[in-house]
Length: 230
Image (cartoon, rainbow, N blue to C red; front, side, top):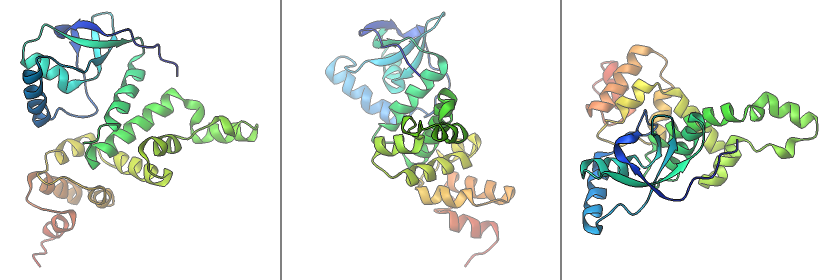
C-alpha cells in the first residue's frame, strides 16, 4: 500500500465532509470537553484528515473536532487532504483510533479486528498462506505479520495482539453497539467470557444485562439467566 502524501493544511467547507460509518462512535462527553476548549482558545487548533472524493470529502480522522465545528456553526475547518482509496482511508482511521490513549478495551478489540481485516485486504501477500510461500522462496524477511507490527506500535506482545483480535472478531456489530452502552466499562476478560458463550439465548441475555446495567459482570449475568440467585 502506498498512499499519496496529504496536501498542506487547507480550509475545507464543513458541509462538504461526509462522516460515513465510523469504526469508533462519537463520544458526547469528549465533544463537550473539546467544545469548551475551542471556545476558550477561539479556534480548533488541530487539523482533521479527509479524503478527496468527487462530491466533496470523506472524513478519515477528527470526528469529534468536526462535530464541534458543526455545533459552533463554523463554515470551514482546517484539514489535511489525502489522495487515497476508501479502504486506505479506513485503514488510516483505524491507526488514528489505536493511538488514542482513551480507547476502551472494547473499542481496542473492535479497532484491532477491523484493522487486521483491512490490513490483509490491502496486503494479501501477508496472509498466512502467502507468507508461508514467500518463506519457502527465501523472502520471509520481507514479511512483518500484523501481530508483530501492531505489537511494536502498541508496546505489547504479538500473542496479546492476536488475543485481542480474536476477541474483537468474536463480537457481532449488534453486540458491540449494545455493550458500548454498558454503564460499567468492560475489560478484556469480560469480552473473553462473552466470546465463550455459545448458546445464542444466553449470550443475548448476558449482553443485554451488561448493557442495561442489570448485571455488573458476565458471571452474574450468566447466573441470572440460569435462575441462580445465590
